[in-house]
Length: 120
Image (spheres, rainbow, N blue to C red):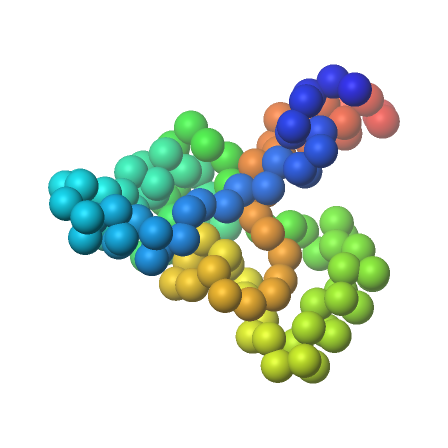
C-alpha cells in the first residue's frame, strides 16, 4: 500500500481536546492553553467552507467537511443510532466541543484530485 497511515486513517483531521491543552497551561506550560494554541491551528488551516471562530482560511493545511456525496449510508445509520441513544450530533469535532457523533473533517484535497484525474 502507498501512503502508510494516511491510507489507513482516511486522512482525518482532528485536533487535541480543549481540556488537554488547558491542563498543559494549568501545569505551568505558558502558551499551551487552548486559547493560546487556537490561533496557530487557525493560521495553519485552509478551511474549504470558510473561516469561523475555530477555523482559519488561507493556511497550508487543507481542511474540509465530508461532502454529502461522499457520505456512506451505513455511517449515516450509525450516526442516527447514536443520536437515538442520546449522544449529541456534532458537525465539527474541531469546533466548540469534541463530544458527540458525526463525520470527521478531512485533509485529502490533493489525493482526491489525483483520484479524480485517474478516473477521467
